[in-house]
Length: 622
Image 1 (cartoon, rainbow, N blue to C red):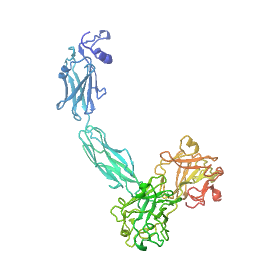
Image 2: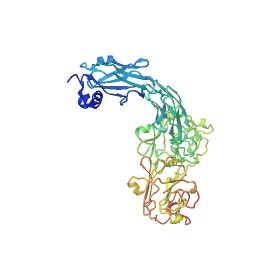
Image 3: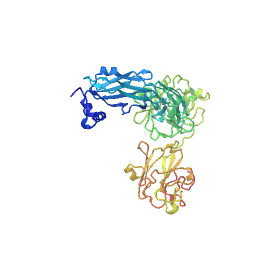
Image 4: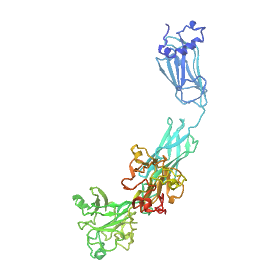
């Protein structure tokens, strides 16, 4: 056998070689392979078998040519040309398969809509002087220029207010020939104090299709609700925006304003503290008729939250006694401060008189021992963990604690600390009241929270059982659960799930609350099994289960609501919450009185009605 015919290549491309030779022979019997001839067995363009003359080719190419023989690389490269209208194209060449396969890649990007030719004239290029007898010519034309289009996206669309981060990405539809700059504009309800942008533009270098910047939310103490940041493209360099691009981010407010003062709740705070009672009876802060430098010291606490704070067993230390773990005061049992409530702890004596709406107490050691030169007040919880502190060096930095006056927040609750006479020159202190001497608003008792107020397991027969008001009585669609939000904050049920006892065992919810299902303070939400709820329902929000069936068992059942994380949020158990009641006698079970009472049959609460979705048992607005 002559020459250095590549046997592995022959095995792979025998069919192609056979057809090439067959064209020059009369019959298969006359076929005589000339091993001294080099054949081109195949060529691919960017990984695809593409015939010569192809159009719409990318401006970056990788062209593989498979020859039948091992090549003399030096001779081949002398004969190989890669040309365009402007002359030779600079390219790299790589060899494989024992130098029988070459791969060409252009070093610089080709021109758009330009014709190129790769050719090898006949010659002896085989490693054993085998000859390419037929010229090899491969032509292609590159694609038309289409400027890269920019699209914007973000990985997080809802940011927590406390340092939430969203990465905004600009993506090119295709490689750009020059660096791309995407200039951004920021709109929306959020202001510059609500977020920080890592940059006002996104850069995308040549060779990459993406670039990023970040939006970071900034914590504040203002109740604003959800605010938006809209990131838009203002201009682009070296690319285009075919359709308007924008991403809208939401900053979720975590501030609660339970007292409606327009400022976020501060939590359980120290509002006022008296280190140095004035001389004489002017310093009788506890109003027991005697001025005492220790007993008339006081700390005024305010519960600026929507939850009761139980101080029972909590301890109070000054800086000296903290070192020895010897409390100056232990709060007695049942010391509970309701939402909006005020508690004044005096050093001792017998607090007498009007302290606004505040509760009062005296230190169990009869001495708070507050040092006028500088001190700390530390409150620890029942487990010994620090619950609250006040430091003259930090909280009261720059203030004089030895000036016959208290230090107070100005304005009350939300303001920084100041000398009391700076807040109100007429008073040196104001235990239990505002700096003006006026009482704080009376604390409201805590509500019941988010509750089930009424449930209909067994709709009455015929149209009397048409609880959802759609004109048809259905044993499943007319079942309902009435929820009431007896608190000062809205409850967002979006994504929460509802189960009956059977569905809970299989982890198959009967209902998924849709997005934006928000029940406001004192709001009512009625969930029907199905149908089309029609009517006023006392102004309540209404919905129907996503499965069309709550499947409440008249014999006994457990209703369970889970939050978005799968934690149990609320339950109603017919065996415990309404023990002894028959749920299968054509009427609902309801709290009586509404909201605060225990569960009874509806006709026990109101003999004229079998149920009252969205309203009180008497049909009036909740």
